[in-house]
Length: 224
Image (cartoon, rainbow, N blue to C red; front, top):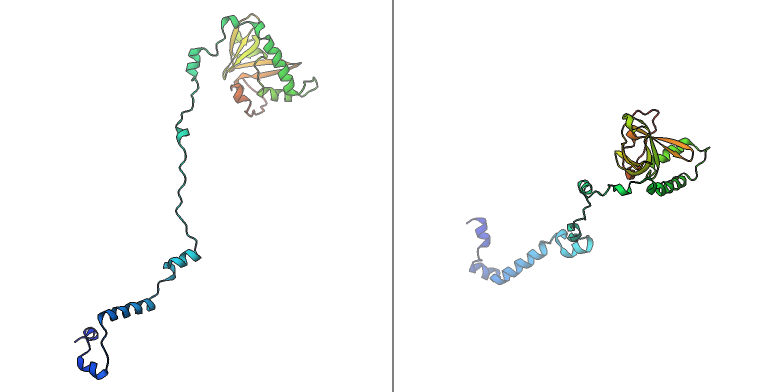
């Protein structure tokens, strides 16, 4: 008989009488085994729920609140495209409104605006200061004269600036004619309280709103 079988075998009756012992019942044996294991085998502290909650921080699950996407789904109102504006003739000046005298009040208003912009112009003032501020000023209402151009027919044209676009100036002349002068390859002059400044159109090809925020670099010479 091997050792395991001998260990699990019941005590013979003659030994029970000789040793005066009583073999335990199966229920008592199971209770003893359970108590023995409970006292001998302890649960590690890291698996003890009470220890875990007392001595360690517990990270609970976190769910970010859902953002309201209803506003995103709303489409922004789209403005008119350049093609639609051309078809609707929004920027077109009607023939009956192409009169020089109608824009003289605009010119007077521009003169007051430009003087306020410079804080009062004086003959002894700095021409460089005048030129720098003129680069970012609104020119609607100013009287411009074409002094140089690669197209000779533009030279000498004088009028009040009624519309400025990215690439062209629109001038109304004393003859009540609307002239469209390209900025590129043209040089314009403007008179401000005795100061005569020149505008190089090739370096001036921005919209008025864009030009006010642009930084211009000072150059020694400029070509058409």
